Length: 303
Ligand code: AMP
Ligand code: MG
Image 1 (tube, rainbow, N blue to C red):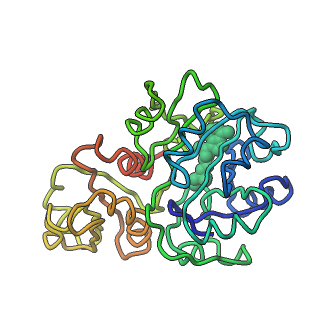
Image 2 (tube, helix red, strand yellow):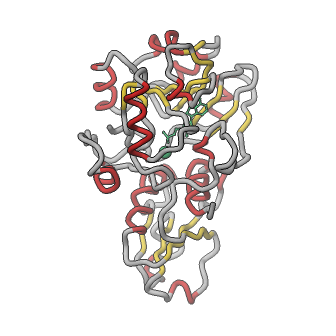
């Protein structure tokens, strides 16, 4: 089903057997916990221990692209939390998803609807392309308006709020609501460790073709190679017309929100194009586009 961030593969989040099927279809490692999606704030107390600051966070950011990690209650299956004592919760804003959640009297566990580790889906056809033969229904809600996964904020220890995954909702916005500093977990974990947020594996969101990132204009030999694909942030710098191979721009005007919205679509297009390898431009100021830079870096990581 659609959300404003990416398309999700949904199951009843209180039914461990239903959640098993998510892991099977995605080939997702069992130590990668699922996010539970809810229709409203009132559902949370049954699932988790809400700290005092939760209402301010809910008021400011929900429904929307923010996931909160809290201490779980026993009703949440181990399958969802990967056996841990915390659970991740989000109230999304996509109107189709909200209607679906309202119709269900249970939370929906829903990781991204793609094979584990591959580029996330931001359109119904992306889901069809990679999981079409394995799932029964795809709810088409149009292209995702944000196109990058939610910000994950760990409030399981409310004294030490920590961002586990950057997203559209920025650290400074959260700090303004909480009135205290929030740390950003920057250490990439490798797959051998049990990850606190496995979305933080250094390699994730990755195309099958080699992906290299650049900030400076790439060398002429690459730009003249018809088998090198280029993904630029804007249409003008460097010029798309300067390259011989296939090319895409994430935003005509260089708008970073629009770039985030189009990133996974363009990565998929490049991965299925005639290009042998892909070069993608990093935002000039990573601090102004933390989520976009994070996804590009993980997509390009070799392991
Ligand atoms: P996705 O597969 O994109 O839906 O992302 C789900 C991600 O949410 C996981 O990979 C983790 O990074 C994060 N997550 C889910 N549950 C928890 C949890 N209990 N603690 C920390 N992170 C979590
Ligand atoms: Mg995912």
